[in-house]
Image (cartoon, rainbow, N blue to C red):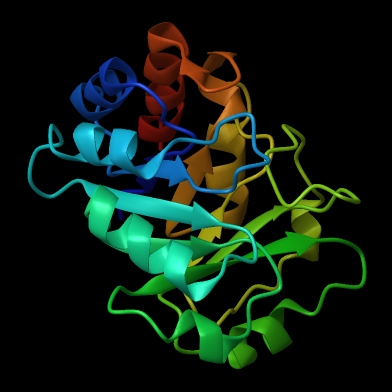
Length: 205
């Protein structure tokens, strides 16, 4: 099975274009204003308008209000929502678009319970836990904490780059991988060579 790839934290049209040309399946726009990779909804919409068919555009949120999500869905023409905060399943289900739920993994995280709690999600995105940071840490977590059989598709995130993505895929066998800092020249600015190397790592298996 081919592994799907999402490049998150897209802020420039040229980065989206390169990512798509190199074979990614999805691009992510961060709509959390405190993020260094934050993008205005209108700018995301301009980028999304240049994206070819069959590429998924994903909106990333941290405890947003309802109106903000609705505004960004419309402005950026999103296909999928990704919630990184403490959003309830009821909140996540309130929108016209499907969603995935991000879980920050630490030693006592019960991923089986989260999979049951968010059973309406299209998948669980597993990221690294760091106090006060909802994501984008650039560090990997202990993959042995992932149970073998989750009831939802698994999207692996957290500290992935060209050096470890092949190992991660071989060990975890996720549905998809998600990368941001691992393919950046600086926060929010992607590096073509790093995206190429990452995709080569994905295709090794």
